[in-house]
Image 1 (cartoon, rainbow, N blue to C red):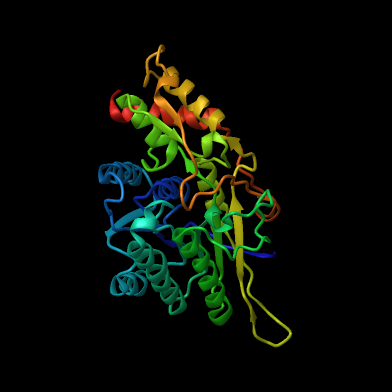
Image 2 (image 1 turned 180 degrees about the vertical axis):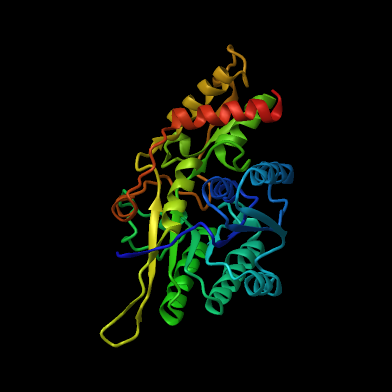
Length: 356
């Protein structure tokens, strides 16, 4: 698919979910690498997980902004607040929009469906409407590998049928892709969806397995390993995710007209995953080794006494496996950071942050 080059310097860039794991790391990269841009971050700082971690990430951004030629503005608020989103677009006229704000988590959606509808559907609709009424060069938004549901065919390709989600979270992410396609077709809005595959790294989300398992092991609790350890995940280090997002931001789907004279939707969806699924037990073994190496856990820690093999959870899937050849083809990028390097960075950060 042909791409229209989008410059990121001397632009106004809106990043929603800016205090989140991926959002904060993206903002840090933009502050380092853009010149004379205005980067506006929006986040509602909800308490789905420890808000202190979100403030920590914002602190890193504030520090980075002092040494950047680009400027940083933070707005506390929800994308479900239509008046706020409309006002931000009207006053700032962002050229590039990266929508990372969403209620995440498969299991949380089982007991808290309302927050997923509010943020992932209503909030994303407000972003689309704002892009419709303002000149936006490129809308990039987060989708998820969860849209593949229980697909048996691996690796997962963006060409695969994804009409059978197994969680409400996955259903909202698939809905985002459908809504974006409709707005791209009707209003000629260049949009690109990114299906992220199990993102991990320093200052990540505490609800993700590697983080929550670390906290339990430090407390001496038992970690549960689902599907009796027979899960495979395409773990993707956060730096690889951000590199992919940055590259995609700079290449918007080209605006073209079809034989009927109407716009061909300037729309694309890509996987971002390592393309090398890791067995969950191997991942846990590597995590344990790196936690010991970093001094988070003692050398003689008895891991066998603190792990329990259990069955599959509702809404979860046994395998995630990304076919990222389209990303490689169109943007020259495939994630490359292995789990040993990534988990080492996490373990070292954890020791410093929690003063273990």
